[in-house]
View 1 (cartoon, helix red, strand yellow):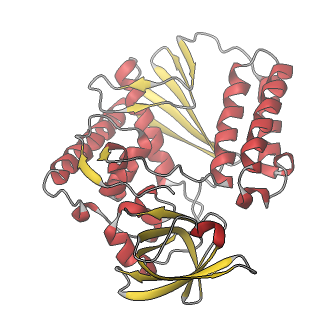
View 2: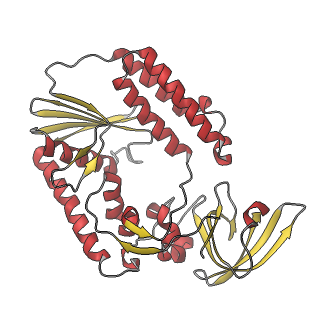
View 3: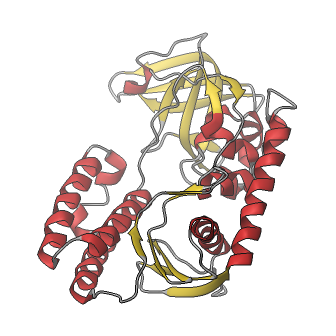
Length: 352
């Protein structure tokens, strides 16, 4: 049974990707995850349909921009779909969504990629055309891999692909996506003598929007990233418990890998509006009643954070290495009414 690792210390942050910086801005503890020294490994994250679609979409766009022919695009993406199906087949919660070849998002990405390959043409007077090229700022603080960028004389074109919605309910562009364009623009102006980046977000749905980012704006954003890193490094050195760095909320905590390490989340989880399989239950097991006929068990846990005895019905396969008196963490639970319920992605971790 996997074990919940203990946090030993936080290493000084010396460089960040865009998503690490975004996490640091919203909840420093969440952003620190990649920089924590643990006494063991975190459990492997469970894939979701959204994450798999996003990965495939980015791969499809990369292939569309780099493959020699439309036929090569089709061949590569058909191979990628087989790999994706292999992953989906290993997870019960994904198998419920049916064959990958029937997912609309995958078919749309495949069609878009072949169309792009067919329509692709050479751009004149180009100094650099780079797809999924890793960039690092000269001071080493920022690192990233834009989906596509092109440098022509003193201007650059930047393109990012998104499989999810790119606007809010009012129709305004997603601010996180704009900040991602600013982050990559900061990397580009640090490496190339350009005065402006014409940046564009394209959604798998067909929606898109553009924004022009000047060299000055990009450098100001790089300074903002550096300031965030400095503040978090200073704050992390003040308290080894790191609880002062947490900001439990629906947005910050949903599907966050840090949940199993975060005491404030465990205390606040029932009050922040979470939905789906995002809840955890931690404490010493007081009772475990097996029902061999139904292949289930009623496990009663003394939950330290809820200050209550909580009974959870789990499949007997989850009981193999748990026992009365052992401290255990049940993750990826959902709520039904006032009760915690075992879900498709739920698992058991040892706190020993």
